[in-house]
Amino acid sequence: MFEESAQDLTPISRLGEFGLIDHLTREFVVHNPDVLKGIGDDAAVYAINDKEVHVVTTDLLVEAVHFDLRYVPMKHLGYKAVVVNLSDIYAMNAKPFGITVSVAISSRFTVEALDEFYEGVQIACQHYDVDLLGGDTSSSRMGLLVSVTAIGKADKKDIVYRSGAQEHDLLCVSGDLGGAYAGLQVLEREKAVFLKNAALQPDLVGRDYVVGRQLKPEARADVIRMLREQGIKPTSMIDLSDGLASDLLHLTKLSKKGATFYEDKLPIDHETMLVAEDMKIPGLTMAMNGGEDYELLFTVALENYDKIKTMKGITIIGHMVEEEAGVHLITANGTMVPVKAQGWNHFKE
Ligand code: ADP
Ligand code: MG
Image 1 (spheres, rainbow, N blue to C red):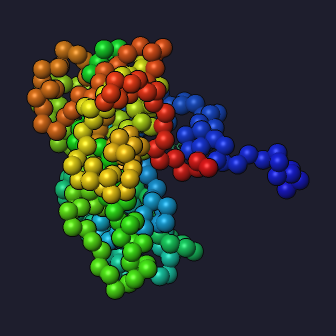
Image 2: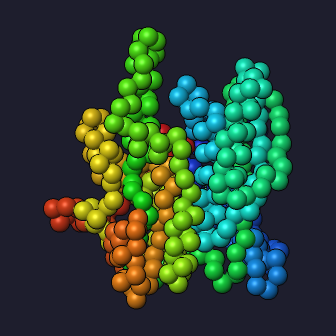
């Protein structure tokens, strides 16, 4: 391999994160008949008997890439590492029951710091009623790496894939958008101030909501429960980890549908708009491309309109159209803008 000249080799940035995953996994086909879904959804699905399935998902968090310990408390990190995985389980319309937690730790960490991290893990376990099943522990040359795997269960008939959206379905989102990104901007700004003058205390006044969205996200177990109680099974679903634009494009691509949705319907919190103003970033950009909200984006059949429109914390932002019509945002002044993903992509140049 050392004989090849650098010109023949492909920089990862040329493929991007999703292109790289497609590239690396293209030769793998699922052979085991119990595996109902392998790569390509929020979690993999496998049958445990005729009626029931388990779902499994995993995530890796890397210090200085996914989190900055200068403003992320270890306890919050432990909590969030669990929550982001549970979010993928709920996005399959399943209920999580167990996690494994693996850590690689550099020598700069103390036992007390790791105790705090595990306190966060435990609070999340209690809150979401899941058990810690195991994990792995290693040293690391630099920084902290955390990997969590979550397992959940569901009846086979209840599983919701990214691929099930139908034309005319309502496109819905839980909670509000862009808050976690707004919180990140505030924390980054205060970090920059602190690095210039360590005597200055961070000014987070009036920004508690968005900072909380960044540091302590929740998985929408409540939304899954509410939909079930109302007798509504979404036709497709994905959790919003990379931003509305990017995640909606996954859903439309896998469902082989287009979508039309409306700027003036997008739920954006007042605080997010204030941060957008402060930072001179359009609120719309935050909502479309800000990651880590961990809300649920889903579609339901049109017949559910009356029930959905009165559901607390759920917003109908648009509807599904035929694939050929494409994915479009209708701006507040009525312009139709094609949607391109600009969300979180690790390898973009
Ligand atoms: P999510 O944002 O919901 O966590 P990802 O975008 O991380 O999903 O992953 C999309 C799909 O690709 C998932 O099915 C995931 O399991 C799979 N995947 C990601 N990275 C790899 C990898 N290195 N090898 C195999 N599968 C992967
Ligand atoms: Mg996901």
